[in-house]
Structure formats: C-alpha cells, structure tokens
Length: 470
Ligand SMILES: *Cc1c(COP(=O)(O)O)cnc(C)c1O
Image (cartoon, rainbow, N blue to C red; front, side):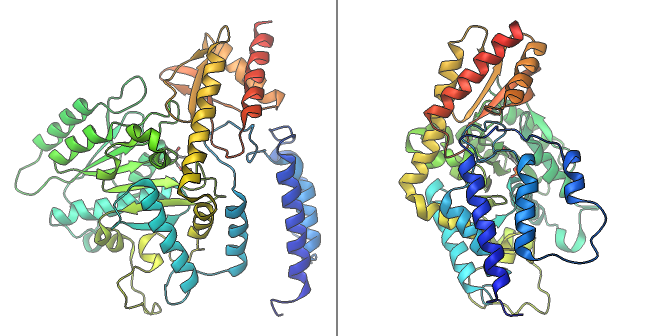
C-alpha cells in the first residue's frame, strides 16, 4: 500500500478534528476525569478482536470512549504537579515527527532531523547560558536526562581514577561517592540506582529545601578522608534547580565552588527550574549554574512541549559520547566531527524528539521564552499573595518561582481541603507531604494559565476551606 492512499487522510483528519475539540474544551471542562480506568476497561478491552477495523473508525471510537477518562492537563486550571501544556507549534511539529517516522540515530541517514536537533540544542544552550561547547541530547524526560548526564559523569570520574567502566564494569571499581541535597527529586536516586551507584549520601538542606554549602563542604571533606590519597576519589555532587514544593534553587555559585575545590563533578537536575535561566530578572536564582558539568531538564514541563521530551547537556563531550556510544557494524558513521544523535542518548532507535523543542523556541524566540517563564512565575506569586490574604491559609514557602505549598492548620484539614478542591473539579491541585506536613501543592506550568484561572483557583480554595470548616 502506498503512503499516499486515502486511509491516512481519513484517519489523520479525524485525529485533527478530535484533538482540536479536546483542546478547545480545556477552558470550560471539569478538570478531573469523570470515570476510572476500571470503568473504561470494557470499552477498550474485552477479548482480542479476531478481525480489524478501519483506521478512521478506530480514531472516532478512541476519542469518544476516552473523553470521560481524560484529565485536563493542558488546561490553565490544572495546577497539579509540574506538567505544562503544549504550544501550538510544538504540538503540530510533534505530529509531523510521527508522520515523518525518521529513526534519528545517524546524521547521514536522517539529515533533516539531525540538523533540526543540533540547532535546537545550540539554541537551548544559548537561551540558558550554558557552555556552548556542550553536547545536547534529547531523551524521554528529566529522569533519563539525569541518567544520561550521570552516566557521562560516572564514566569521567572512573576514567580519571584509572578505571575503564565500559570494559570492566563496576565490580572492583574505585568506590564512587555521590552527594545530593536532602530534598533532591526521587528521579536522581532512580538514575543513580540504574547506574549501579546505590543510594546517595544526603546533605542537609534549609527551610526552602536548598542544599547548605557549608554542610556540603563538610560532607566532601569526610568523603575524601576515607580515600587512600594515591588515586583521585571519584566524587559526584547533584544539585537542583527548582524544588518541587518551594521552587527553590540550590545556591549554585557557592555549592559548585565547594564541589570543585574537592575535585567533584557536578550534575544539576533542573527538570523545570533550569528555565529560570532564560529570565533576565531571575538571574540571581541561577547564578553559577553554568559552572556545573552536566544539566538535565524537561521540555515537556516549563517549555510546554508535548510528552515526552527531556534534554541533557554535558560539557565533557568525550565522556558523554563514550558513555552512550556503541559501534555496531550496520552503523555507517558520518566522518564529520559532529556527533550522531545516538551517541548522545541511551537509545539507538529514537524519534527526533528535538524537533518540537526547535518549533517551540522558534515560535517564541528568546524574548518569548523569557516572557512565558516570567508569566508562570508571576501567576504563582499572585496566587500566593491572594491566598495568604485568606483567613486560615498558610503559605509555607518563599515563592521565588512557580511553586506554592499551602497548609490549612492541621494535616487532616489540609487533606480534606485538597480532596474537596479535586472533587469540585474547577481546578486541580495535588496533595503532598513536605517537611513533615501535609500540604496542598500548586504548580504553575501551563502557558495558557491566565488571571482568570488564578481567580478561579483562589475561589476554589476559599470555597473548599469554608466547606471543610462547616
Ligand atoms: C519532573 C521532575 C523530574 C523527572 O522528570 P520526568 O520528566 O518525569 O522524567 C526530575 N526532577 C524534578 C525536579 C522534576 O520536577
């Protein structure tokens, strides 16, 4: 069958129609799903069909049956977790990526996809003020971006200690000490576990969840004390841009200075916080960020690119390419100096995930990216200001970025208010635990969130609190 035949047109037209209807329903719809996965299992399950169904009919069926079970994550009233929506250019580019079906692992085989990703990578470094010599890889999310950056760091610290991890693995290797802030994201632990590095040592953090540089200094001293002094001790420090509860940023300049004084390698998890570096007025939050060795972020969060899209940047290009490359016989390599896409990521076969990033940045420009992030920050601080004026609402964090954590007296009240807000469905906010308390957490990450949405959020909290108090 040729790719030009009608079935594609009918199915794609149907998909575009349903997608547009879904997106246009966002400003008005109940945010939470109306049914559970179990409720839907009969619609999508049943016995395996013996025969097929035309593509366009399937799309119509999918859209109709899935509709009540969808969460309005692309809504401006969705404040749960850091999710983000999709910019029109990024979403449409993502569709093209699927239609193009380019397995983007070799530059020579998929030159358009490779060139677009390389441009997106350079723009990304420029936007965030990261070292221009870094390699940039497009992965599935910040978890894999953390994994990839830390794999490069692992390769480097072991190579510096005279150990070839590719050939000899980890058994018998010099011990690697990993230090993280007490409030790092769990995905750091996951990445270290995937890498065989075990559980990291946690360094105390302050009330906002920022790593304490003096404590880091002491922890690094202790790690070096245990070493024999002949070979360098492999040391890795993971810092964080954007704490999930407070939005706080580790003090990069001090922490990296301390880490470098101990010859440690520094990785930064900036899944949503790294984008603060695009906002000139927020420069204080990310001062010194560029002095790290590797950086992980998500494009599917603050940049508002569709899932799934994470980005990793690594200054030590040799370490990254060594950690991620293989040379099977079927890969006829481009002889140029530029890396092939597969050398920068854990996968071999992969879509050109950087294309929607390119489209997002192209559609906004440098100023537009800054304005988008600035707007998210302004909405968060407006929310915090208006909520803190309400009787019985405690704003627990210094609102420096896009996150607000609230409590309403005791844990039971906070949980009840959270459940009430979610049940009402006008907005969605998530319950969480932070520093020993139940909290209601608000994340502002959708590019469409406007003043009206902020007003609805304030109203939803006020009504829920009044109802719970009776
Ligand atoms: C979301 C997040 C991650 C994980 O990102 P995924 O895209 O879910 O893999 C890591 N760190 C922080 C701080 C996050 O907010």
